[in-house]
Image (tube, rainbow, N blue to C red):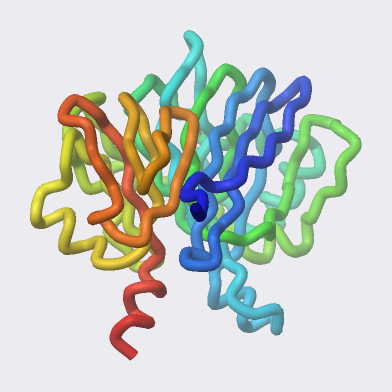
Length: 262
């Protein structure tokens, strides 16, 4: 019998514990990760699809979103800047390390949700646990890494970065632990939290293959039980049995459904 559970890969170190799930062929555009930090991660930025296409490397942009599932006291995310920066100022700040202090640091607690558009400079602070759903791209430009001996990408990174404030009112939500809520409504992917079985309105947004990410309780996909910390692909919602008291995330790329109508 074909397994519905996605294959995990894990990266563990002093700074970060990370589990990610190999994108299945039926949903190649999305990548799901669980990230847990012991130290602050690098200040970085991702290009847009339009920028990578213009560069001649195809559609490899990255937009992503974070749902905070754990946070130590004082945990923060750096997203956007306190005031506008031009390219020269951003480059100088990345070189001397002051970029860390120019970022806007947002205190976080479980249930905070942030969408990170391409070109947004960002960093994950220490003591954060989150679920990340992103475009399946490995292009990351590091601007600053706290003196750690990893390659930086200043030319490419500064060229695609927006040195501006993060539109918190637009991109941040508070997610109730047991409620149903639409988190992302395109244009690149959809993400919903559902408590129990999805409503007809939610079901209509997922007419084909989808990812199922349990948050509370066990979800059955086909003949497999998927617990929190896991991720599975379902051919359709008909293959998923939701627990009445369970909570899970549903996700799909927009391109998959668009292909059904071409």
